[in-house]
Amino acid sequence: MDISNFERDRVSVCSEAQPESVQNGILRRSMRLLPSLAMRDFIGRATLTFYFAFGAAIKVGALILALRHIVWTTASSIDFAADVASLGFLALMAVSTVTRLPPMKTAQGIEPRIAALLGCFATVTLIVVPRVEILPQLKLFADLIILGGFTLCIWCLWWLGRSFSIVAQARRLVTAGPYRFVRHPLYACEAIVLIGILLRNPTWGTVAICAIALTFQYRRLVNEEKVLQAAFPEYAAYKLVTPMLFPALFR
Image 1 (tube, rainbow, N blue to C red):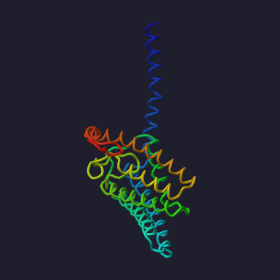
Image 2 (tube, one colour; image 1 turned 90 degrees about the horizontal axis):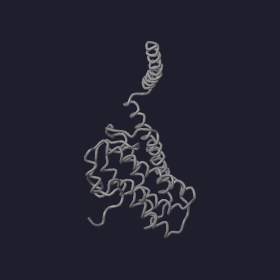
Image 3 (cartoon, rainbow, N blue to C red; image 1 turned 45 degrees about the vertical axis):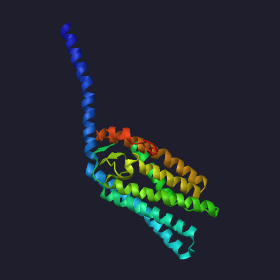
């Protein structure tokens, strides 16, 4: 009787262990079918570079057309300068993507990737959306906000440099320049740009894209926080003394 029970237990254990070994085998075979990490990084880098370069090319075309018909005034000069600043930001994103460092750690799962792509692409899409005619005073105010926002974005991205990424990844911890004041200055400055674009182009389509961009940009920020904390032990101390988005007026 005891021997029979022992045999049944052994058969039961073997039958339970077999599916697990089968699953591990399937997982290993699936991983072999995927491109290598280096190849995946190259594909992502090439895709993003093409996207940013394509947006920059559209912007260059719009600027060339504008130059043919522009009448130079203070308002038109600021408007043109805002467009040039947006072009500079797109170009710098393309360069930063090409030259970025390999990641030390990457957020796992599908949600961080979806949030990153939707947040980034929605923001870039707004840069090349055609504009509607509005009151000159509102247009001037919006252009000043856009010009200031993009100038700040370029400053932040210049300091971020080779640590720039779309998906939440840890490449190098940057705490200098604008990162002395807040942990995520680029997101804050992009939000300023979104406000200016919304004022400059007040349509329901712009409102919808801005809402999508802000929602998923915040998700990107949250995911980046988790990755940076996991990759850099010193991030905890940096987080304690540096606000997330808004500089502290009094310390």
